Length: 406
Image (cartoon, rainbow, N blue to C red; front, top):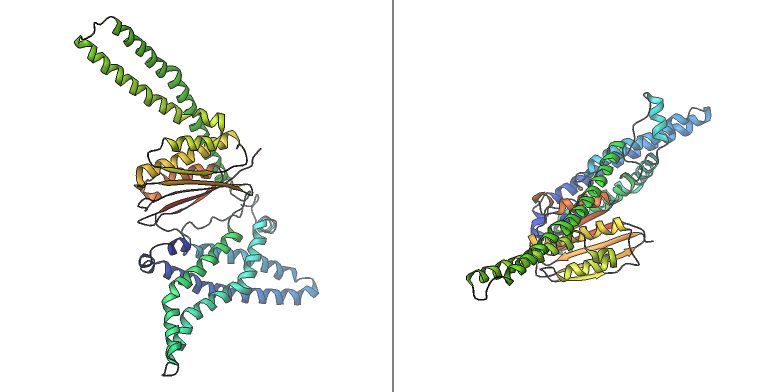
């Protein structure tokens, strides 16, 4: 799977990482961070000084409000810069004013929680982050330059140290860029209730679509059980009655035996299909028992270590089961693995699943390996996933789903 973030890129093999664009993207992210941070400092200092001076004559509120609103611009630039080290980026969480005009826009922005988170992020960026960007760049490149200039017979150990620092600079720069991006996402990413109406409708439509799929799956299971399976049973009884009328050793007896054998195989496959569509063990005994039952019949040996404090809500339990089922199916179809593991725990209203295999890796959602379907199901569950699948393996799928037990 191609990395989507700077931190994911660092998990690649060293040669792949060093020859990729990620170190350069991280370098550009930190360099522009210094420029943006210095500009933010200038704007804040100017606005605060002007506001405090003019506050005496009761007009200082305007510069202070300008300082608050300038953080929106800083946050917009940061979201744009973030795409250097996080290819998924972030959408703008600000909502559209209900009325036209500057007054409505100003009122909307000053009452949004995201505006004040952006102000806090801008303050942190101006006070510390851009200094840390500069410090990392100075350590990674300035220190080696100084040691090389001052090298002589007495200071050659410092030159060696400078060379080591320079060789490690791609990892130093990328690791800090990844940490800085994670911090920016914490402050600037949309929160619950801040998604636009169109995005809310997309999310709701995904939920309705998955619910309709689940309902259709139950209907198909019922139709197969009450229709096709009963007809196969009736056909088996008919073949049994025909056998009573055929003498032993007759040529037709061998053909009848073959037909009964094929009918039995078809019946077994149909029962397996019905059990997979709506497994009774899931309804009767819960998620853990259902996953263990599925793993016992799986073509790849699977170790199940799933511990939950109780039964999940029925709809969520069904969705989680089919999510694990689909992930295991991907392992059988694409990974070439000899073994797999399903690990799950419940922590602080969050179900955390890890599904790993020892296959050849290289899982890529763009290649149609089934990860896109998993991502769609997780979005409907308000969950998220991370995939680590370097070429040569192993592959680890980390899933987090918010949930509450009864």
